[in-house]
Structures are given as structure tokens and as C-alpha cells.
Length: 281
Image 1 (cartoon, rainbow, N blue to C red):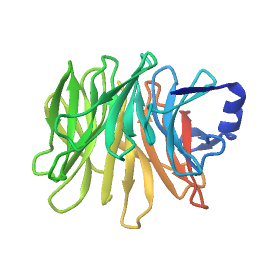
Image 2: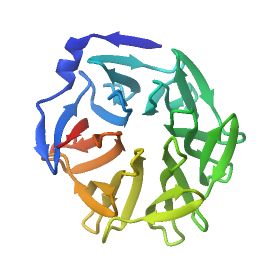
Image 3: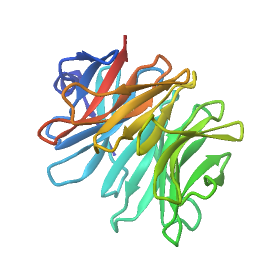
Image 4: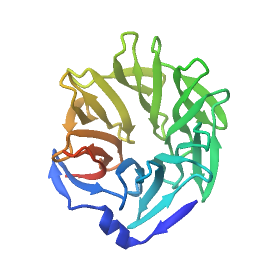
């Protein structure tokens, strides 16, 4: 179900912009929501995310061309969009009335469920311009695997010796980023390109997730050091840069567009979660 809102709503959603760490940040808050997340952005600047209402239910939103459109998968108890491609197709997770998790594709105003065969949950997290979808799914034994859905065929993706694998994004050239947990329980990011797996670890971090990648190969995500504070990061040209939203206690960068602009979420000093859009200087 789609629910359109006008430009005046956007003025309430976007807070005054502020500059930090080479970016100008704009906060995204859906009016009346207890929390807002911005998950994905395409090359046209369309942003998808979700907001949580006072009853604790999550709803999807699309912010595009100065308009905000809220949407829910019909019959769902929650809707969590993760990615939008340049054709405007959106993928994400929804929960049905029983609480079971399924993937969805929203294309041309039509919702289609995505379920890995025999999976207990399917969670799409990225879609490229060709309609290839990546994400994670859970098997009957409770283990999480990454997946690629291309041409109607599912392929499992598992980092060797990992206890957990998730794929978060895929580019038009087939590069994928995600995260895995090793045998010691430590989480690392990864890049899968041309059949070659490269581990991504922010320097001196104890936890790293690679959450987004653009056509130029720039990678964004989040990391945590021993102090327990979560930060966003950019990996570009082999160099890591830490990214923190102004006055945030927690920052996660979830996607980067063709121009180096980013979206994600942060928590303020009161523990409230906000989405953000940040333009690269």
C-alpha cells in the first residue's frame, strides 16, 4: 500500500544541514516517528528507509524529488526497505502477520515476495540496475548465509570457515560487499570481486561491516573499536576515513552513491535514532 505525502512534509523531515568530516549532513526524521533510518540511495538521489511509529511498527518510505511516499507490503506487520536502484526498484524485508520474515521487490507499484527455497527468513539488502538482488537468509539449522538472486536463480554465498555471512550490496559489474563472522566470533567486512574475496577491517577495530559500494569501488560501512562506540567509515583508494554525524553517539553509513554522497543513521545524546543524507564537499 502506497501513501503519498507532499513537499511540505519534506520540510518537516529534513533538519538544518551541518558540516562534518568532509560532508554536509542533513537529518531525516519522518514526522511522528520514534526512529528513522535511511538505508539506500540511487544515482538520482532517491532515498529509501524505514520509520517506526508509536506502536513499534516499521513502515517504508521513499524520499524522491522533494516528495515523501510511505509504503507497506500489503498484510505485513512491518516493512523495512534496504535498497533502491536507478530504475526505482526497491528491495527489503517484511514480516507477515505471523511474524515470519520474507523479502520483497517493489517494482512499478507492484510488490513481489522473495523467498530463498527452504529458508526460515529471507532478507534482501541490495539490488543493481539489472535487477540482481543480494542479501542473507537463514536455514533450518539457524545459520545465516548470503545469497545472490540473478535471472531467477538463487546462489548461496558463504565466506570459507565463517559462521555467518551476509551480502549487503551489489554493483552493476557484480562487485559485492558484506560481512562475516569468523570461528573466533569476530565480525569482518568483505569485498567479493571477480571471484576474489578481500577482507575489510577498519584499523584497530574489533568489528567491521561493509554496507555499501558505488561504481567507483568506494566502500562504506561501520566499525567499532574496543571502547564500544560505533562509527561510520569510507574506504576509498585503499584509505580508511572515519565518519561521524555531528553530536552523534552512534553512526552507521549504509550506502554511497555515484557522486560520493552517503546515507545512514545516527543516535543522538537522548538515544533517538535519525536518518541522514550527507553531501561530499
